[in-house]
Length: 292
Image (tube, rainbow, N blue to C red; front, side):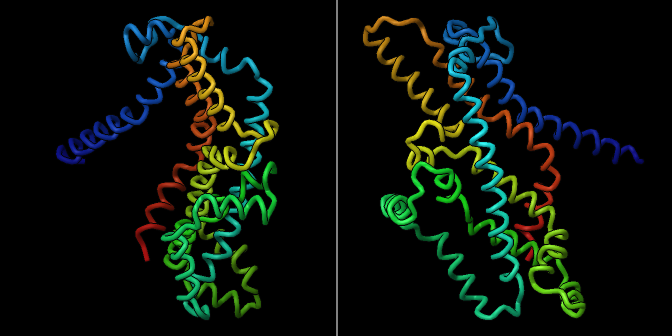
C-alpha cells in the first residue's frame, strides 16, 4: 500500500467516523434529555451528559404499565402481520410486472402509477372502511388502511427483479415444469432477498410508527398501539401543563422529559432491529432504485 492510498484510507475512515457521530449524537442527546431533571433542562438546556439524573418522565409514562405492555404487543402483532401481508401483495404484483411477456402490462403499470398521483380523500376513505368494510375497532383497522399496499414498493421490487433475475433462469424453470407460483416462491424471491429485506424494513417502520389509523378507526383502548398510547399521554401532559399554568393546583410535570421519553420508548424496538437489516437495506435500495 502506497503512502497516498494509506492517506486516502485514513481520510475516508475519518469522514465515516464523523458521519457516524452525526447519526449517533442525536440519539445520545435524546436519551440523556429523557433522564435529566426538568429544572436542569430548563436552566441549562440540553446536554449529552445529564447534570441531574431524574427518571420522573419514565415513572409518569409507566404509571399504567399494563397499557404500555399491551400497546407494545398490539404494535408488534400489527407490524409482523402487516409487513408479511404487505410483502406478499407486493411480490404478487411486482413479479408479473417484471415480466415483459405479461399481457396488458402497461395497463396494469398505469393503474399502479395512478394511485401515486391521486387519493380518494380522508372522508370518503373513512366512510368506505367503516361503512362498507366495517373494520372499525378491529385489528384490521391498524393493518389495512394506507399501509397494506404501496405503489413505490411495488415499483422497487419490480425493478430489482427485472434487473437481477435473468430471464434464462425463469425459462429454464418453466421448461422443467415449474408454474408461476413455484417460480416466484422458489426462484425469484430467494434471489431477491436484499429488496425483500429492504421493503420489510420500510413496511415495518411504517406499521410501527403509525398512529393515524388508531386515531381514526380505533376507540377501544384495548386495541391502542404503543404509538397511540404514547401520543395520548403526550396530549394529556400538554393539557395538564396548560391547566397548571392557568392556576390549577397540581404537582410539576416533567413535560420536556416526557416528550423525550416518549421518543425513546417509540424508537427502541426499531433501533434494536435495524442492525440486522442494514446490509440488505443498503444493497436493496441501491440496486432496486438505480438499475432498470
